[in-house]
Length: 266
Image (cartoon, rainbow, N blue to C red; front, side):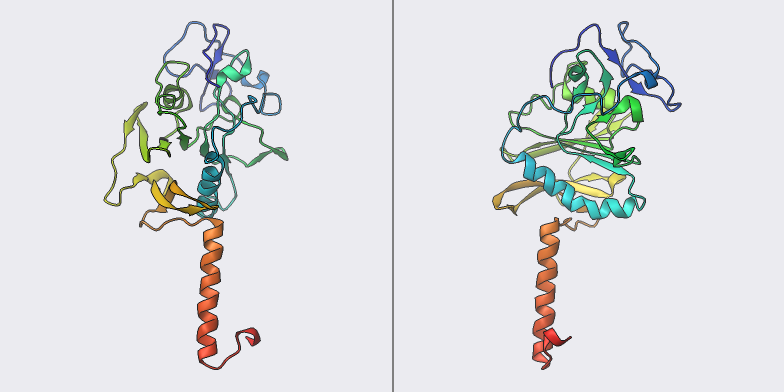
């Protein structure tokens, strides 16, 4: 999904009044301003470019991020109004062909939007229909990271997330060299974040920190991108939470047996 734009492209950026959409970033004479209601929604746009995942690490890495942050997001959104995309289409402008106006971040989080639309599972996230930017976009670099740092206007991922999508945070994770960097959108430009004393990047708007963690997940022992809370406590995956609960139950059972009480009878 990294093809160049054509002159027929229609660029979009959501306005607060939600009726009209306008070009992202610098003005472009070829851009058209149309009524948003006349444009396609997630059911009418491609939800795949036919390409497989880059490597065996991408899928478990996405699952790990989602599984570990879900309890925190449910506390932040008791009404359940948020969406998480994992290698899902993020349509940021209306083009022909439509995939020219789409990126597929490896992981992104959008607050304040329903997880489903009119009872249907989201096939993609279409910004000209919802006009809510992702709070964070994360890319896992399979190569040297140049694609993720590409600032080419209307084409490069860095430029698109900064100038068109306006994600508050952009994180680039290079798993095969063990490197992560993070940016914060300030006055329309990405500013590199500095590591804190724990070696993590702080994302205050999400109430988390993000950084590297070495360990085993789903049988793969390597460096992973993980979330921590603001106190530096690792956010556990569903499997880690279940194991923690199992160990807690075993310790309780041992104490009961020491007191002469059968745990099964309690």
